[in-house]
Figure 1 (cartoon, one colour):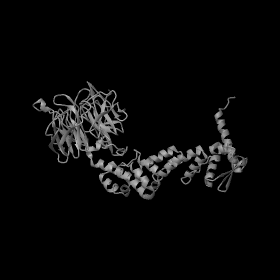
Figure 2: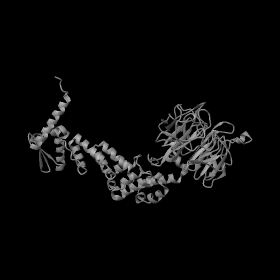
Figure 3: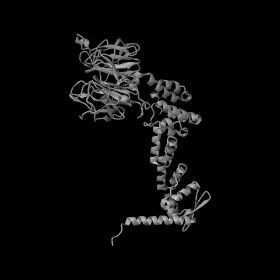
Figure 4: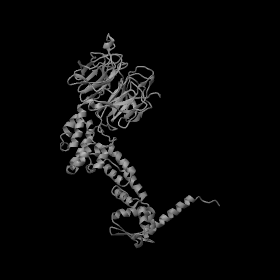
Length: 578
């Protein structure tokens, strides 16, 4: 006779035991422990309670008084809740609803009944709403419900505009508020919504929340607010007036808003766009030439968050080599270059369009251009159209006033120079190294005072350098040399070597400030064109690759950091492997 598979018999035996225990419980037969809840008595079986609950198993195995006396007193549970637990344990029935789900979950946690805990969590997940997601999130955290915490947290982030108006929001503690406003996935169209929510929370209990609000202030992304909101709503707040640290954070934000020429140098954890914001910070690559030595007119934007390249509006013409560029606010300006020496173009980030500006009075290439105040300054360079070789290396400094779209010749360099780099420090433009009229590489450092319109020479570089790149990080000026040496200018205008990028030998590369570090892109060495983007921390001499795959091969190009509306980041670009 063929034997039956064992599994069906196990199930039959299990059901028989289960049904019999339920019958014995209701009949009160063979019970060996009395559980008393709120003066109500329940006759139960130790073995049944122990089989489903680690709490009771530990109790009955420990030799505690309850183990010998056969009586257990439970204080922190309601009578009706324990009835529901016994129904679940003995009959498999789960009497769960919105009114008792939280209490059952708490009881399942206390008694360590895993299956009941799972069922309660599943029920609560199905009933998470905008109105109760904060309560569900707090409940989930205290009772180890990972999936419930995930679902409720998603609701908080996705529906924050509605959630922050709920009553539960007023009762968040400081740590919970910090966790919410710090999340980059918070779905808000602007940072004013976040500030409004935090300020309402503070005003709900200002006496007890003043210190907490002061700490939270550091995590509000105030530089991203509109100027009107910052000056009219934030700065006059009593909390700001009374608290020095709050005033410092507000001052930082006002500086960001009122100094558009210095925004690329700005480094603060508060200048960080959320994933769902309309705006995004990108690396922009303009023109130059590629690995085939072809001049290109494309304009590319690299999304740091999405790690993807996008095509922006192309240049209206090919700039050729050795043009200069700078950022003012959220617009890009490009000047000169081998194709048209007196050219000035403006890229409008609000429309993704290029426009022509009045031509420079003195055409040039291999020059420097920076933004200071409300003007652009073009310094030195090389003019191919000059009759005599000695006159081709320029000392002229021209100023372009952006609002009036007009040029003036505002001064001269102390020493004519080209192929140099420049940086702004306290309204002074410092020009580092370069090539002199006699083709010699120089270590001269000179600065132009934009107020006095005078130029002076200061302490020299440790050694001559040309085609270097100046980067301002945290108000510190670094000069990245073609051999990888990093020089730093101190407060006394002395320049010293402070670090070195290993295995670095390139020129015509891009270098910008990025999150307190120096970002290097592209460049050339001999006939080789680099295809990489990495950051370098000069304090610890550590490099970190941002992108090595799908990177355009570029040299003699412009690299800048810009804030763009995401509607212009639509057309993805792929590049061939190196």
